[in-house]
Length: 94
Image 1 (cartoon, rainbow, N blue to C red):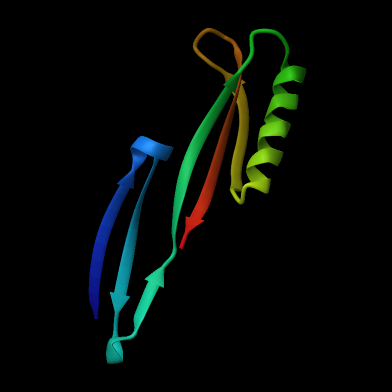
Image 2: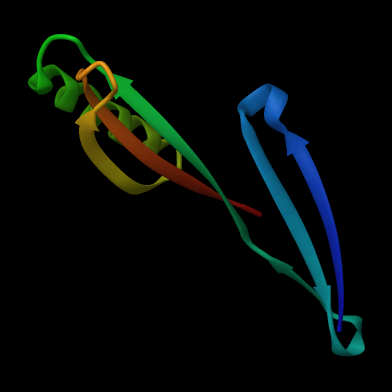
C-alpha cells in the first residue's frame, strides 16, 4: 500500500487549511479519504445574553444552510467578563 499526501493551503482566501490524501492498494485502485476542516467562531456581546443567543441561532441556521456541520456550541465569558459564544463548525472536503 502506498500513501501519497499532498497538502493545499487556501488560508489567504477562506481561512481554511486542509490536506488531501490518496491511498493506493491492490490493483492500483485509488481511494480518496474524506478530510474535514474545522473552524471556531466566537461571538461576543456587551449587553445581554438574549441578544447573543439570538445571534448564535441565526449564525447556526445560516451555516447549516451552507452545508456546514455544527460540532459544538458553548457559552462562557472572555477575559473582560463579556458573554461569549464559541461555535465549532466543520465541512467535508471531497
